[in-house]
Amino acid sequence: MEVTVRIPTPLRTLTGGLDEVRASGATLADAIDDIERKHPGMKERLLDEKGVRRFVNLYVGDEDVRFLKGLETPLKGGDEVTIVPAIAGGLL
Image (cartoon, rainbow, N blue to C red; front, side):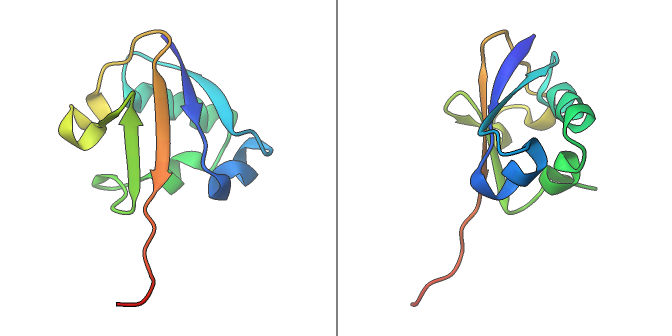
């Protein structure tokens, strides 16, 4: 399945400035592996030994994958995957 992956500004250095890339795979994990083949370094920014990094949010459509099947979330052609880095800071 080919999906569109929306790339946030901090990760665009890995995609040559592209704000969207195409990826193929039956699951989110497969799509991330495909992105890594095309844009080395992306996978380590998204995942750690436990799965999705704590300060990275991944969505398939409008759904946070943490509330779906995580990296095993199935994908269908035309799905949109969005990478959202968590933002922290500011004054209390």
